[in-house]
Image (cartoon, rainbow, N blue to C red; front, side, top):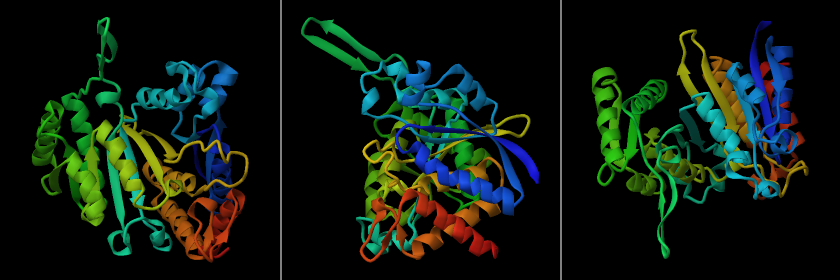
Length: 371
């Protein structure tokens, strides 16, 4: 049995618990057939944490996250908590986790599985075989910059301010992650900003270029304006391999890329820190989809994004590339066999529940392992 790794599970609200349940079954399967186990703990987060503990994430939960090897996160939010003060809203828990764990690098893959190529709104030839990774800087930029707020100019006029701000080291570290990841992919990076109209854009381009020239000149680097990148993602998405960009543009472009695949229910993500002096890299892994309160408790949710997020955790936090690929291959096989949850339903395909999709993944894992 491989040494236990500390895994904190934060199911959250809505469909969070439902989509995490199949991952727990996969973890049990790994312990039985791969001799890999995890030291698992579970805590409240989001709206449920607010109801029970008075905040969307408690200090104890934050401390446990910091002392874990990885965090598996479900989803948070729902109309029940719409009127909660901003600093205690379910979504605030995500910002706290990212900031306290210094999870500055957000990895959002946009992969089109062959079996789902017709689910995209784009022509088949544009997205067949698509495999893009968008790397978003996550803990700085306009979402965290100060000053921010709304102030009165006079009795008839107000002014709202958000500040876009980046430091040299913040850009350097996300650039290094981009180039390191590119070496494991197609050795190609597109750095995206608005250097034509923004000071931070010019600054971003300058720092990325300097890091490239001094440390990674064997990687192919191109620069692109954010508005052009959004257009090119729709026009010719396969020209991209890895896109690195700031917090705001990363938020927008990753959702744009997500819809190339046809369903948010299929998309995983990872948020990671730098490797510390002990060799540890903190990471939080979550599906891109939300808490979907309209279908919560109905066993209809698609668990594949959560399962693929777990596969990313194995790869990036624990260096278990073989196990990660095994899960990804199982997902591909299940989809090729015609099983679909409601969100990715197609004609002549079998519609299955959350639980049934999870069981199908386990069955496919057994087939691939020859059990």
